[in-house]
Each structure stands twice: as C-alpha cells, then as structure tokens.
Length: 92
Ligand SMILES: CC(C)(COP(=O)(O)OP(=O)(O)OC[C@H]1O[C@@H](n2cnc3c(N)ncnc32)[C@H](O)[C@@H]1OP(=O)(O)O)[C@@H](O)C(=O)NCCC(=O)NCCS
Image (cartoon, rainbow, N blue to C red; front, side):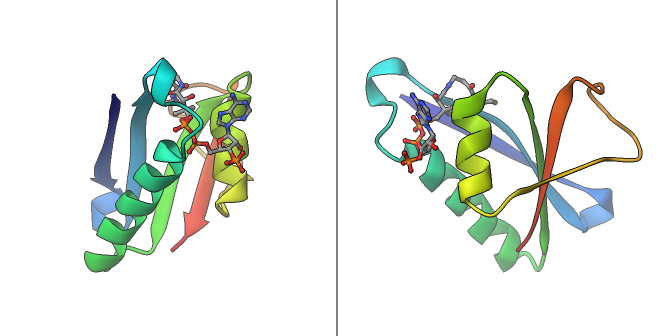
C-alpha cells in the first residue's frame, strides 16, 4: 500500500528521505505527506535538524508536495544523482 525509507547522512547531521511509493488506489489520501512528517519527527527526536531529498524534474506529484511542506530547492556542491534532478532541503 505505501512504502518509504530514510537514512542518516552527513555524519549524523542530516536525514535523507529516500524512496516513497504509494500504490495507485491509495494515492491522493495524504499518505505521502504523512510519511514525510513521520520521518521529520524521527529526525527531530534524534536531534537532527536538516532533511534532504531529491526528485526527478517531471515528478510534479512528489515535488509539489515537498514544496507545500516547506522544502526548498538548492544547488548541491556534489550532485550525487546528477544535474537533471531537483535537490531539496528543509531545516527541521
Ligand atoms: C508521489 C506519491 C508518493 C504521492 O503520494 P500520495 O500519497 O498520493 O500523496 P499525498 O496524498 O500525500 O498528496 C499530497 C500532495 O501531493 C501532490 N499530489 C499527489 N497526487 C497528485 C496528483 N495526482 N497530481 C498532482 N499533485 C499530486 C499534491 O501537491 C498533494 O497536495 P494536496 O493534498 O494539497 O492536493 C505517489 O504518487 C507515488 O507513489 N508515486 C509513484 C512513486 C514516486 O514517484 N515516488 C516519489 C519519488 S521516490
């Protein structure tokens, strides 16, 4: 129905929000938003105050949601998946 994951990166200074998938008939019910919030809450409990992620530029469902939730596009020094992606960060 829905799956997500997270990694702690930057020597414990940031969380990286990795995969999020919500199966077709369960989409548009706020599950993605909830999965972002749960991971942010986990990071705060660990004392981590930056969340990072990326999306493909054509994945408007995903990046619109991130923007609505306070994520900002940034230009990373090292574009770890390539320059054809949007990179996002949020101070928690
Ligand atoms: C992207 C994805 C995770 C969104 O999951 P979701 O549970 O449907 O998202 P939500 O219900 O939390 O939607 C919240 C916001 O996302 C955006 N959104 C979701 N579905 C959308 C759609 N069909 N069209 C446009 N925007 C959409 C909207 O901004 C929405 O905000 P709103 O509630 O104010 O309208 C889901 O579509 C998916 O699994 N897609 C395939 C995998 C993928 O692209 N994963 C992300 C990259 S790892």
